[in-house]
Amino acid sequence: MRVLLIADDPTFRKLIKQHIVTAFDDPVIVEHVPRTAGQLPPEFHAVGYDAVLLDHAPARSTGLEWLAELRARPLFPPIIYLLATPDEAGTAVAIERGAIGTIATAKIDHHALAQLLRDAEGIQRRVLAAFRATPAALATYTFGSLVIKGVRCIRAIATSPISTVYLAESEREARLVVLKLLRQVPNVSDKQSTFDRFLQEYEIIRHLQHPNVVAIFDLGVADDHAFILMEYFPAGDLRKHLRRGIKPLAALGMLRQMAAALAAIHAAGVLHRDLKPGNVMLRADGTIALIDFGLAKQLTLEAEITATGEIFGTPYYMSPEQGHGREVDPRSDVYSLGVIFYEMLTGKKPYLAPSPMGVIYKHSHSPIPTLPPELAVWQPLLERLLAKEPADRFQSAGELIGAIDALAPGGLP
Image (cartoon, rainbow, N blue to C red; front, side, top):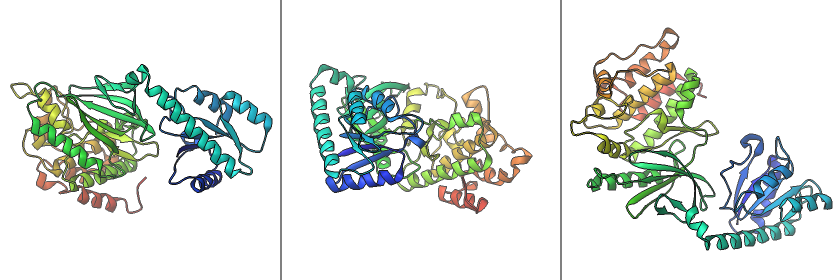
């Protein structure tokens, strides 16, 4: 039994969960709190749930408005409407709007609730079984030329020379997800060892389960494609926040979260290689997570380097050794964090030039930029992050975390 519980009152949510846990073996109950989370995203159809419990008074709206809107979403599971007190007229209106029944929250009828949940489960399973037998189901689960059962394609949201990224809904995860479909670009397809290592590194990330690392839900290969099913971040990436400006202590807190993520992936034997604001994602609760690890960068470079070795792109965040094609280690990722930290503090990139190779040259030869007087307290930290020689930088993400904690003994936002 998988239930989505939509209600604001934490005491009531706890009570209703106790009733469900008593009635079913190992139920999955996910809470959605309208007061803080708002309406469910319009793309979300909750197909992975058996039933939805909807309170009559969600914040900033009415339960009946929610009920009508949610029932209009294709394949949305049956809704049990939660009234404050027993009310025949209220029940009639709720059923007219699409609910399968009501429960009074003033005194919950345990057996009635359990029966309604069983009814909802049966209805949803029949609806999904009938849908999956239709031609429309094939189109629903198709991403490009690849069919992935149980994952509903919503729309493509980004494309690159090596992949297409889709917004999707996973029935198994019962949530919106990102599906990254990788293509074997012709001038990369013969590099089987690189591609295999790419999949191996993502398999490692999948099992990390670190709060500052993107959650990987599935990883697979079908036909000539690999796909990665991962966490979706509706709040977007760090670039949007850079445009609005970030206060120094908030920037330091974000830097610490990034360093914690690096410490975890480095300990697992993976380098990021492509740290930049577009790969730093934000959640609704303010925490951040790193995405796009390991050999994604290597595969992209192999697809984009010309015969003369010129890189098309803007390597603003590359360490000197990475920009010049030398061997990299965790200290290269630490350097990239330094570039991001400088940009968070100042709103500018430390090195600019008319061409990518000009930027690479400046990373190796130009002086480390000096912060303005009001930010001078962070200059020593920046000097260690952006040192030209790896030996002069923080030697690990863990060492960086220690330095950050020393600068903010009272804690960070």
